[in-house]
Length: 525
Ligand code: ACM
View 1: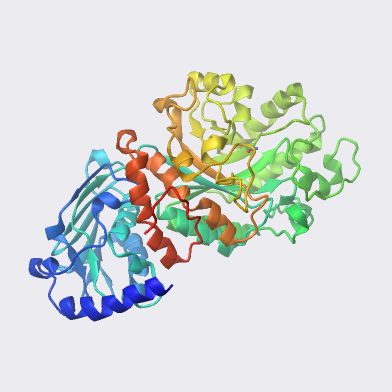
View 2: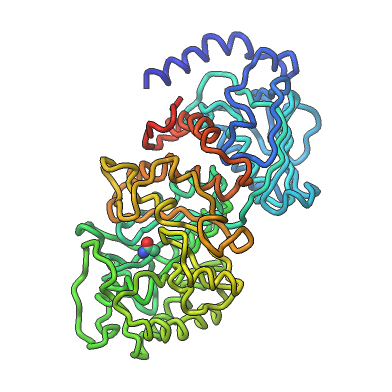
């Protein structure tokens, strides 16, 4: 805290005298040193060329220029820059001359695709071009990191705002870059989920997988089965209060995520991990008798009743209602750890449930256990194993299914960093920052290579996590590493270079109030 204050005081005393009021010209740029360069950005861009003579200084007179398609992203950028600068930063559609950050949609070239962008920072202004608003949004996250970290402050900082000069050409390696939040073991409010959405969006994560149901709690209102939420939503691990999202709240979350170019993939876990549903409706149990709620962290004991018709009425109703409020193309149907379902029943269940997803116009994702059911080729099994061989997943890849990679011993952010980490579990091992970063999704699993991989996910299970501070402590600093694995070219990634770039992210997290783990593997700024 005192370090942060003294930096600010110095900023006022020195920088304001030197630069305040000067026009944004090359001569002003010579007096203004950027805190970062385009080569410091996380995830690492495809191509970044710094030019210290081209630093741009944002001034109270600066504007953000955007065409119609870029207007929303421009407003988002203005919203990021206004609190700390105190500048007006109007979003305008027509502006000639310097002093502008210009967002332009279209004609950015095939290379940058739908999510990539071209950024040029020169002393007279900033030009960001992309083929889509999604690409502009990616570029804005890069631009944000070219400002001093104080830009993340929520109150006005009296200082100069120098944007690091240079050019960036950038686009992602994989189109599916995901984080998962388990809101079932412990419930997180819509505000907490929105906070996490903002935190992951800055690293160009484009998917949020919400684990909405498990043995300990059901978290989404289903109007045709109301007790799922009003009874099944009452519990959580350890006996806490639980909670659930109304469909309106869920819709609002979907909309909020979309405003950050993030797609929500909802998961209803089945045929196991279903105690909360079966506690809510005794008719879902084979013997029709009520069962108690569970708030412990055992797994593998529950199963839907495979030979009862009502099971499929239930599944159909739930998936129909969920599909209707989920604009994304995927529904996640779980499928993991169904140890209380016989292998024959597991196959029977899959054959009945998979067509329901298609009937409601969606594609399947699920834990990689579904690979053994010969799912449709549009289905995406999510690998969560801990070894480099899995015959069923390799066979699915060979058939043509794309695989989402989240090996538990590399990508599970609920694993402890080391034996003394106060939060988290350790069944898949300890995952220090380097372990989490130093692997590749296209070589981890035998028979699953670059063209078989749809992307990367970093799951965060919440058996031990109750607050947003807990989420942050486990996700940071690991999450930016998974984001980089998903975005950056494979050949551009080395741990030795990454740890230096990662260190420079920490002042941003301090400003954002993110409670991160100060791993000794990184020399934090
Ligand atoms: C899982 O960790 N049970 C997918």
